[in-house]
Amino acid sequence: MTQKKMTILTLHEKKARGEPITMVTAYDYPSAQAADRAGMDCLLVGDSLGMVVLGYDSTVPVTMDEMLHHCRAVRRGSQYAYLIGDMPFMSYQADRAKAIRNAGRFLKESGMDAVKLEGGREMTDTVRAIGAAGIIVIGHIGLTPQSAGKLGGYRVQGKTAADAQRLLDDALALQDAGAAMIVLEMVPDRVAERISKALRIPTVGIGAGGGCDGQVLVLHDLLGMFERFTPRFVKKYAELFPQMEQALAAYRDDVTARRFPAAEHAFPVDEGEWERWVTG
Ligand code: KIV
Image 1: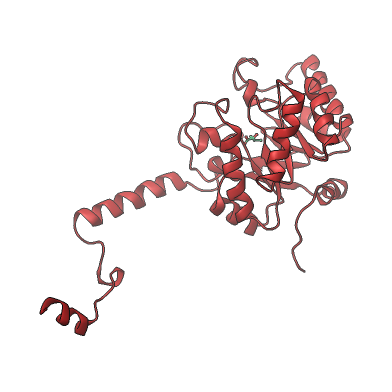
Image 2: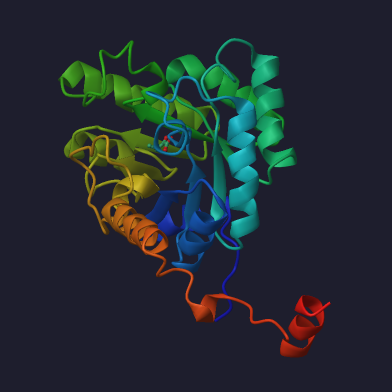
């Protein structure tokens, strides 16, 4: 069977068939290539890159230019996965015309298939406006890292009956506004499951339990490449950071002890040319 590029329709069909959607973040050419070859349905160029790749304290400082730079690399590394560019803080909140222009840049300048933005009912006019420009929009509710300060930190959302209902209302409002999928972040599992069942469009959960239509994790968390903290909802499939550190220390030791480079890493001279050169 030949593999085909994922589309929003194939993702919706997966929900209809009850097949989980697989999504991971990717930020550069090699991570996109590896995730694409692993058969991932969707790659999210998340603004989490601000923390795990650029070393910022939060996602707030991330700019459009930084996002587009990484999206272009992911585009070059991916053939099949559905590609989603994350709209950074203040690229869509203040001004609807600017939101449409910035969403368009993700498609025109970096080859993304869709954009994602954070927020519930307060974002539905923006979702409609971007959608009317022919751009597919993915919503993101629950813990929305760009407004973590307003939410009182990185906390589980939708714990009370009233908050859970607000999340459901937000999800339905985003669906009505034309959102094509919704990320649910740090929501109690049964709340996320109830929201997922109430929607026609797929939900993709992160810290939202197994009742969502798909799952997403941050690449550096699941590969063990981010040392600062690991959220409870992460399953680590590798411990690459200590391996990187060990490999780099071994290289440093080899260079210091003159064990590297060995003969097989060097280019031998042509003996005749060498003689001609040193004898003048
Ligand atoms: O930026 C990101 O990586 C995200 C995921 C956590 C969903 O928004």
